[in-house]
Image (cartoon, rainbow, N blue to C red; front, top):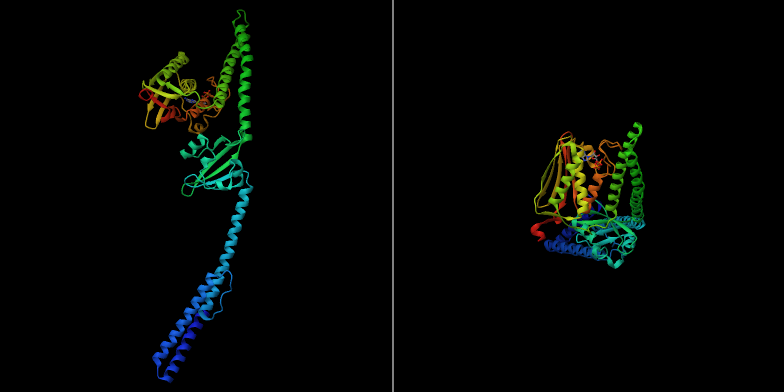
Length: 433
Ligand code: ADP
């Protein structure tokens, strides 16, 4: 038992004894005890009033003097208050430090509530998006109005960051990386990626220009090689050398053509040439080319495509993507094997699948297959005459059509490359009429 409490008990016992003695002396024991109890109650009420008055103003005045249990109560409250003040100061320091750190960051940070309104932002975000103090609480779309950003936020899939020109300064590029937290709130990281963007642009321009510049000299060289190889009295060693030069010339031409195609895909503006492209005639044409490409290798081709389907897209790009997949199926299958092209519509969209009975691909290679120059056999001198750019072109074309590439393969059994187009890209005859 603590000291204040035992002192209080002692006080009650002493008061009761005094009341008993006084009651016995005056002959009114009961009334004296009642009167003593009432005085004690009044004293208790007085202490409570003092406690209440002090609690209401405890920041400014000292705790009242009290003995017994009330002394303990006042002391304990003062101790709790001191501890709370110390804790508050510590937390304030932590918050201040956090604010100093986020203000020193060069990347912008914004906190959005569930409705997409700005809850808080750091100094860098304010600078990058030209936000002012009174903008807090307003929707983010008031400040980043780009339709692609609105689409990105609405989609709610934030695995990849989004690069866009700054809403205020045309030559500044910003990258938005969104992370969900709490109950639907979002943390938006905004980075200035102008330098990276410029470097990437320089890389694209360089590849495009070099490929373009190499085209003319290569055509001249190939022309001379062809003329020379046709001369009747050519020594035997020269004949073989010229044959190889011709083959390498053809390979280099396809490499340059593929690099130019990729560069065009990377630099062209999106969606500006999207029109309905009838699928069956397009695939029939590619099948015709693939039959010619297979030649003596006698592959068989099966095309399964409904008549009335069309895809909203760029015909040349789609042709290039499907051709790459179908020609690959021929290149990587043994003679006489079957290549099937299946078009299937579902509630989610439209799938164009190219299946072969070829050599198949080990699963370790699948994630890297669409990288430029990535080959399963690893050699630069591909015996199939491929450039290593085909699947990179397919990936870029599909990206520009909002589609995805799915690859399923079993070593020794064959592969299926499926282009998955979203439902918005599908046009049926009924829809287009
Ligand atoms: P390439 O011009 O070398 O064919 P691609 O980018 O088209 O380049 O393909 C990359 C690599 O993926 C190829 O080198 C090949 O190893 C593998 N590949 C592509 N398609 C198939 C297929 N249908 N069957 C087996 N392997 C394939």
